[in-house]
Amino acid sequence: MDRMLRPLHRWVWGDFDRRVRKLLAFAEVEGDGGRDILRAAELTPDPLLRRLYLEHAIDELRHADLFRQRGAALLQLRSARSEVDLNTNPLPGGHGLDDLAIEGEPDHRLLAFLHVAEKAAAGRFTIYRDVVQDDPSTRAIFEEILRDEVFHMNYTYTQLARVLPRSYRRQVWQARGSRLWKRYLRLAAAVANVLGSAILTVIYFVVLAPFAWLARRAARREPAGWIPIARAGSDSPTSQY
Ligand SMILES: [Fe+2]
Ligand SMILES: [Fe+2]
Image 1 (cartoon, rainbow, N blue to C red):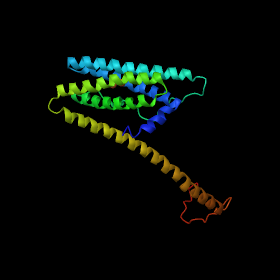
Image 2: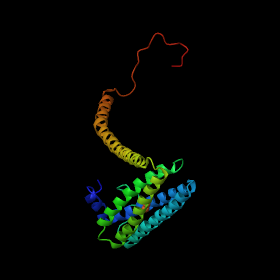
Image 3: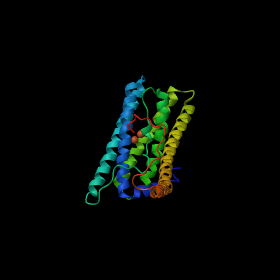
Image 4: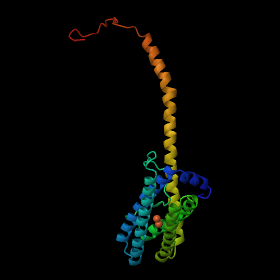
């Protein structure tokens, strides 16, 4: 899928502003992921996993720093040109760690989730590294981060097989399924948003204009000024009206 989308990735990274936005968005996702994995290290009862989670968290926080520094450096480079709008993110980040939920998750579920997310990240970062050929510094960052992501992908799988020797494969498939489902929900929400806006726009132009025309026509038919009303016999003599 990602290979098919390679021209899209090339287009996204080909633009300077989008490149800066992506780098800063990645910094956010990696930093958030790092903090969540740090929390997982606090919660796990398994001493080996605690050490590995700690190392993993340190890696992710370093990735956040690398992305942020590179984004800032690029921003400084172009400070003379027009301002970059940093509030919009055209595509989701490469890591997928933004879906991570730590509290109440057993280690095997977390490991399966991390394995799937890291594998996706490794695939994405390989593509990003290839499409930023024109920018050796950014390329070097992807190269470096990619090595860490491959390590994360492998250790999570090995540890999952250790803590859940009988059904670790099924756990990975479940994690893949839930990741796909979340992707689908995000896509469906985005499509619903677009459709909702389109339908409301159509209603605005199609329904509102005839309604305004009818209201104006009805107003023209109303006689202006005071109108005599036929007196009804049942009116109370004491009523003010
Ligand atoms: Fe990372
Ligand atoms: Fe990672």
